Image (cartoon, rainbow, N blue to C red; front, side):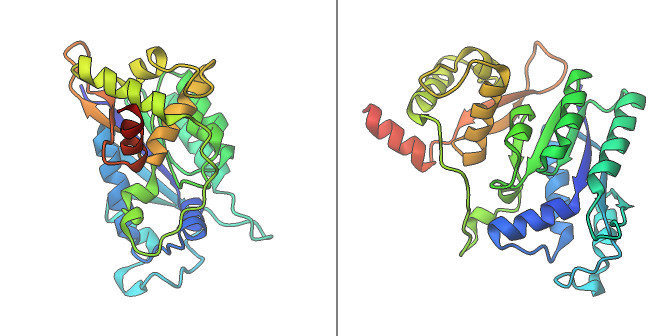
Length: 270
């Protein structure tokens, strides 16, 4: 049985982050809506989605002849939720989104996967509560602004810029933190695992194949950070595979052999 996914989008968080990191302005909200829906389908079965924002604030880049941002999301099966700003202008989406997600967590057993589309560390308590309740948490955010704590909780972390194919666009500059992991032993281990296993389970590799030579791996969070950093950088990719031992598809990880780090690692090995 395929896991059912409910998607929660903090639109302002994503809109601002994309502009800040990639100089990318969302002028076609329907493309973001469709990309998120496709990402949810890749992780399980789309169940529902909510997008939160102050829709009274106009976004000049969006041509209103095609409908408002909220209307365009609604055409792609999202429920748009109006969250007015404080008198000071401060956004307060995080409070509304967190409360509604917690309500669904308590009342709806049919929601097996929560996809939080935001990078703000304020969502970390919500993500932890979801995991403690035995549900899976997918974090979808913008590389460079995503909270490291959110990445450590994610199963998995999905970079939005990859969904929107921004890395293929000319003139895109990514500002990110320096890499703090040794990728040669990671790449070597994943390549070895792929050579002896029918597929490499995400959790299996995280729990059994990581070594201190790659970076900090002492705790669950350390291992999760390393795994999700590999996915964030594009060194490895998360995919779904059928596992006869389980009733629904399993998350697997595979090496991106076209990535420059991977090619460099193989050159060092040889």
